[in-house]
Image (cartoon, rainbow, N blue to C red):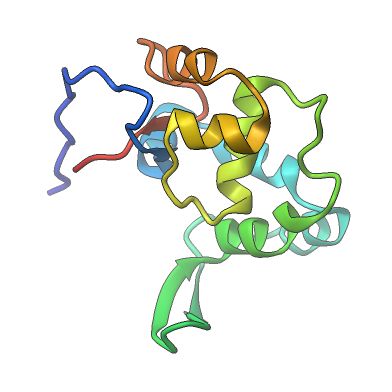
Length: 144
């Protein structure tokens, strides 16, 4: 039985960490894999043409040497394609910039304040966008 996360009524502030909640995205957007595939480099778009959604890979963490089972699709996007120099530009929209920054950093949580520093966008605009009632691209506060 899958456990549903409770909705939090705590209002996020500038130091609340956010991340991409892939579980939320999978439950709320049927085309999430299509969108992620569109972000891949041409080489990996070709490789993942016939990829099954539930295919997992064994990955060795370079820092801990721990073997982890990861989603091959997401892993390739974050560890290769997102690192291309043109993946995130100054012309990228706010929501898209935040989403792509999380892909670039391996989905490590960041606050609106930290996102502002890295993206050069106003921290209050980032906070208002991510903390509003609408969830964009699965960008949500981290559950504690």
